[in-house]
Length: 357
Image (cartoon, rainbow, N blue to C red; front, side, top):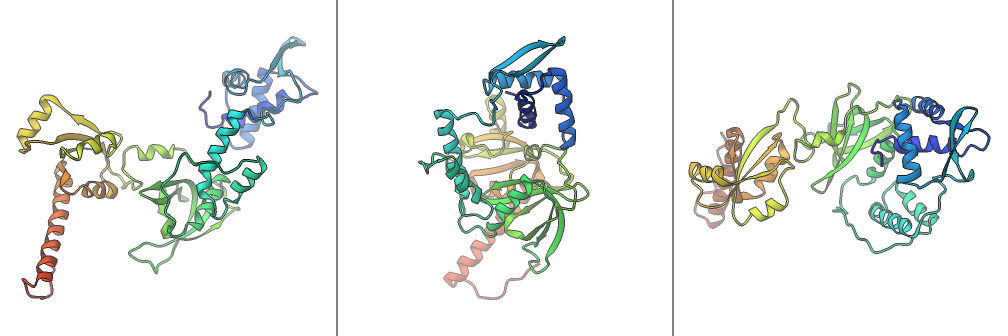
């Protein structure tokens, strides 16, 4: 099945031509007409070979449509054998209905949110009842601004520029605004983020709980993304991509007890275990008598530091030195706070104000 993201759009154009009762088209003519429609709707043109593959997908790989090939006036024309047929009106099989039901029930976890009422309407239209949920997403019922999730989904789906009002936690009273071309909603660590482009094309991300309001700007032309946004996350943990940051090789020691968990749920997609003579050398070099060594290659950002810190003494950064020193500083400050607060609660020291350097 073609993986081109515009395949379904082309299928619709081709479907219209194949079901035309009054005219027969050759593959070359279909290619020409489809390209006219693609350009009109803001998509790139395709070649004859692509259309031939689309026809094969309609006929053999996806929809199993019956297509007739007939020589008319010296050219081979293609059309649906049953002229009343359309891939978009084909009756669903029992298996397809079951699969669609589960998909809608999975999406139904957004039930109750503004702009997602169409889910209930679609279920009623297709006569799909609530079934047993097989897949469950992490859901935060107390998520701040969850009412904006559906509006943002609609803006992205309809390719509408929005005027976004937001604030930072450091300066919550200062409401800022930006014209944003929204591209993607991403969930990380039970929090939703919106990614989109500013007018200069620079990609920005905003946490949903820091967005104050959004207003559609239908008069502003929507700017399509020229990059695969998912690729932005290959080199990072979470959603934060520091400007001009480079991928670094990070060497970590992991305790015996924690290793099975990190081995089966990697810290990053690039994670690999170090074994054999290299591992023996690292044990001697760093003075560890047990544990394992792993290496990841990614950009150091806030989420990575928070993730490493969450393991306390079960994961130790060895290189790069800059990250190791920063993590040491964090834990030293934490230990100091523990000691100070413990001593105060037990009455071992005076309650004099702390001196901050």
